[in-house]
Image (cartoon, rainbow, N blue to C red):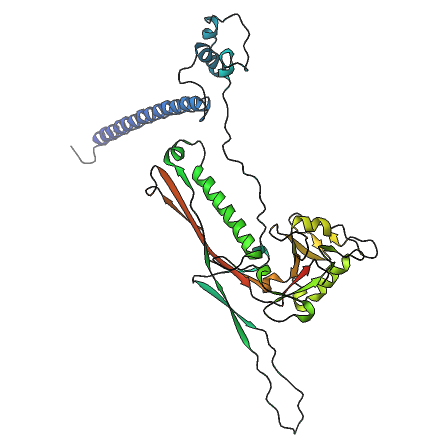
Length: 391
């Protein structure tokens, strides 16, 4: 038979066509089988989700074996099946939730998914102070507090030597703030909410409040030194190393007349270069007394922030409400005013470390948390205090 025989060519074409058709048929059969299996899987997942959605809560005081009427009622609510309700024989007495046996067991308690804590103030001087992150055991601040000498010179006269500036170093050591609460392993395993996350949040909150108090009045012994812990001097006799103060003129209160004058004197006791970035610091009780003050024209010295999150202002300067500041009392320094970004420095390692220890106190788990932080006055000319005393 010739190579170019048309009969042979037609036969080969038919065979190829039949082979392709068989292959396509197998592919369609495979696709149908895959679709059927996917559909069956979707139906199983839907059933599981339905059961989960109508499942019992994570925390439940109900018994493991439900009462028959509970099962019947649950079936009716979940699926609409009322066959179980028809077959029930109920006792002829009223049901209520006040008596456990008469219906109280049907009402399950619900536990909050989180533990609500009492809100506590955490406003800290760090909001307006200079905060630096360090990787050492201390942080040194170099202060150039003297001036460079100068003088007028003539064309022919000899120049005389002038004074050179003096540099002073303030060292701020870092101290360790630590806490170590514990919880039982069973509580961690069985609790319906995140105990570990709750403990971590409480530790961080407590640390914030502890350091906020230290930045104001810490004595510098195993903790940061607060700015109120330094020596004070009347502003007229102020020297470096002390904080200057202005007296209100009355012991434990503002003066009987012209009360606002003490606030004005405090503002202008601070040098002009510091006033541009200055803030008031006081607690809520003091703020309640100050915001009632008016000037000679009857205008309030205090003004609330115009935008959300903006601090209130006193004589145009922002006010930080720090509850760690002392109350108004005889001889107390209840109000501070100054440029705290220049006057106070907070040095810290940037991380809060929490170590989970399940071995040392079995069957309890210890959570050892630590943070290293320090703080001290870095410029004694940048902060002034209001003393509630006659002088």
